[in-house]
Image (cartoon, rainbow, N blue to C red; front, side, top):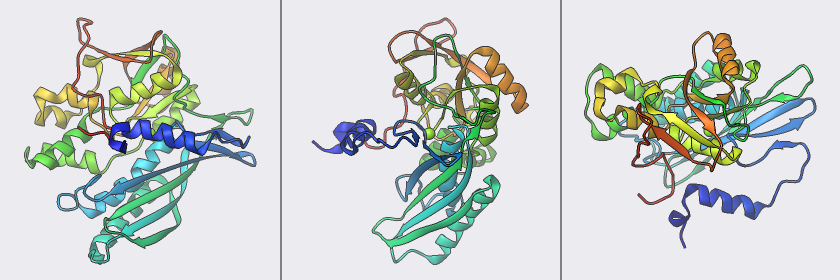
Length: 332
Ligand SMILES: [Mg+2]
């Protein structure tokens, strides 16, 4: 058997089992959420890591190196936001073919620095090694907010309850449409530039994660794999079902301009928008909106039943989607 038969999530399960259950009592959140959390003195450290491979996660001949550097850190910042935390320190590992232009790496790291400055992250170290493929890996630490009792206030995938509202923090589909515009090389003009920017310069929602935990939201995930798939991760972890009203999903305006016919499908299934999916009772979602100063869009509801996401049209009929989201290893 090779790994393409297992797929990304099957492989994660297998590797996690091989390592055995972590037994350290300071570990608060182990494998299976957006990031790990452990106690260090009075603080709760959030840790995550993410890798970008040239030619797989970004196309060096079609995007700016500076944008790739931004995104390498931003995807990690988003996982800290998805736990309700604040990012702090990063370690950066660069695997680089020796024939790489130095100017390209200057740009890559300039973009990384821009993102670090925008989100208050300090790059504290890293490693550089020779490799046949250019790869950049960021490991990012953050800190969880704590309540008056000193306990961490976290957004967990496992905290959804039947009856909870499902909300998103912003329009979806822009990043997926940006990727499509890059690959197809069409949809010229302002809409294309906006979409490519949405794909390469995502703005992780640390602000929304903060408003959410302060309001009492305890369940969330960032939309990195695609709305339906990420909602599915919450269903699996919480042992509940979800119903999403496709017409209530907010759409990126440039997405609608460039890909009107496929806009809803792209918004439901394409990844890397890096908005947050938040799950809580309606009143708590309303409080989070008030604290954020922007309305969260309620797009569905958690229901009793098997861990499955049903996407419904305006008439309440189930919509069949080609695929739910992205798997890094499965064969198409
Ligand atoms: Mg995530």
